[in-house]
Length: 438
Image 1 (tube, rainbow, N blue to C red):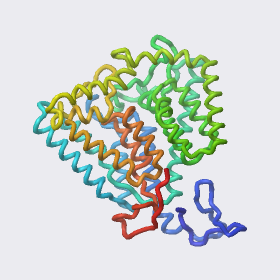
Image 2: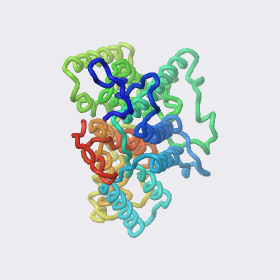
Image 3: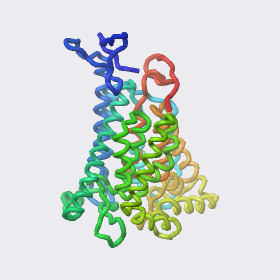
Image 4: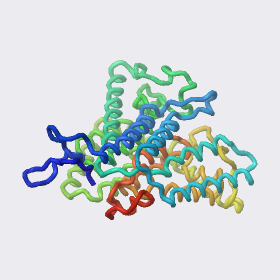
């Protein structure tokens, strides 16, 4: 549904002239923008604030101690939500609100009544971090596409920085990269992430981290998400090619794994011709990766899944094993080990569902995940993007790493597109019904 202008321009065939994002073009001497267009500005500003928080300020926080540093993206997301509530058109869904309060109340009761030890700060972060997912804002299709294009453009900039880092370390060494760990005081940096990481242990050649990202795995995942947006919405093949090359150039496996798990869904409606072109492109990139030695550099990581203490084992195997072992305790149905009590040392990277269930119990953990999935797919602007976010958050996200749930808000949950089925509930009257796009 396009934003309407008072006097839309017409083509020779009588159709409104629009740009490549579906926005109406304005002619010479046309009146100022309509109220409908002006109403979208708060959502665009809110989106840009959150987008900057999850990318440029991803490593930044504030606090008096390393364990108490609050990521700067949280107040930015809350401020953007308040901005939208004050100036845009919010949509509150009964299911989102009810499930949020249900999982918060049940989690609070189980952790205070049954857990021996628990962290009030961890529980407070748990409740605040997912609060912005409750609200959505009514926008047009054109405004939604503008926002997604802005995120894609941010990732073009990140990919450019990535390749520039490769050039710098090939020419004069990685030590000449801008290093936020050295440029900023520890009190402003989020700790416990591998900001500078060698491609192979002992090798003096580092994985590019995009400067602003917590670590290279986040850069890899964000570029993969941008690639998904391009495949679903825009299909600008120069960006697709850039993002595919950038995912390989990170030398991180998480972005590549995310693509392997989601590409069949993302390209579900691509024509046979484009499918063949994409397949040929992936084949060429694969041959180049082999020729340049990329496969030899990363293949050693495949055995990490079976090696106790290895990164892949702690990220993908141990969370499942711990979940199964915990479920064997009959008390685990309603009681966990306490908020914030799961291990944080070594290479532990707990799945969100594992951390939620272990710390609060099976029922509270499942209530949280029911809230998350319902919120993600409720009024989803694009179901295929929502699916990609669900896979990413489930297997590569973290329950209390701020950028994970906030990116789900940024790319999906904050939008209720006008004209979609149920988009006007609780928003002042019915609107036209249209099937959700996948």
